[in-house]
Image (cartoon, rainbow, N blue to C red; front, side, top):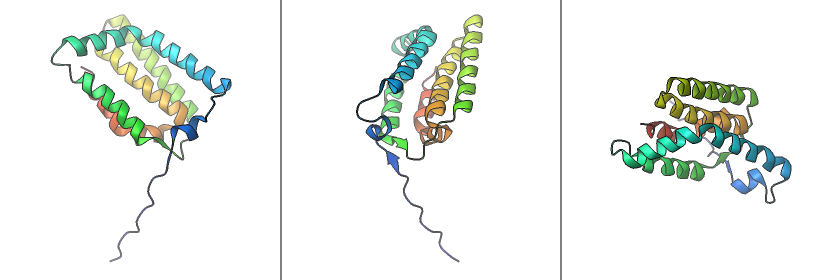
Amino acid sequence: MVAPAATAPLELKSWREVFGSPWPPSRVGPIVLAAVAFVLLFAGPIRVLTGEWWNNPDAGHGLLLFPVSLWLAWSAGLRVAARPNVLLGATIIVIAVLLRAVGGLAAEFFTQRFAIWLSLVGIVTFVWGFRQVLHWWLPFSLLVLSIP
């Protein structure tokens, strides 16, 4: 029996390698526009979600899981072979926006909160590809678990 060959460790890019030192306006503009659109679309559900995390003892774990998931994503870094998947990312984002709209019409809070998570998956897929979502499986799992 032959032992399997050791695989090479996964190479990760630093944030400075990804974005560069001085950010060019052509790179900053779409990021700012996407951030503003995200905040405008999900401001209500985010406000209600943080209020529930703060006031409901059964949902207070979200106050811990959210920052831990951000830290885990930051410490995991970006994959070197990260390639944007624009079509899949845009499709996921459109589904998330439709889910947000349907949840808003039905006044169903879990659907609206899940749409926040789904849109984050779509944005990461759009910018860095679905393999980056798989690389950040733990932070995304923790974010889903933080939704009451």
